[in-house]
Length: 156
Image (tube, rainbow, N blue to C red; front, side):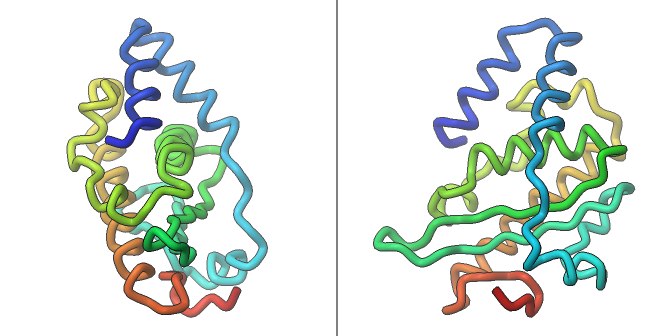
């Protein structure tokens, strides 16, 4: 976990479970809109995380910089899926701007480390595992691409 994600985990751990739900909902409410350049790709079904019951679309990219790249995370999740919006929002908050190596090092048991696995059903946990796999794969692919994106052919 990077420092920002650790701060979020500590914040979640410092409150009782009913407040954890409220903190997650706060992350869902702060979820940013999908940039216009990815809307046509989303509408065409590109970037879909199929492990999620809700329509979750994910577009990671890596902007070149002197330290090997800065991850940019873009996603679209409907408002009726607040849990996934919250969890993806946490990833976006913690890893947007991070180097690709930090994303590669995100622990597979992240929900347990955040202390929220017990709040989620198996389907939501499976969906988030798909999101995490898509993020790691997309960032690795974008880091290897000289154009720095894994958007499935989306032009910037």
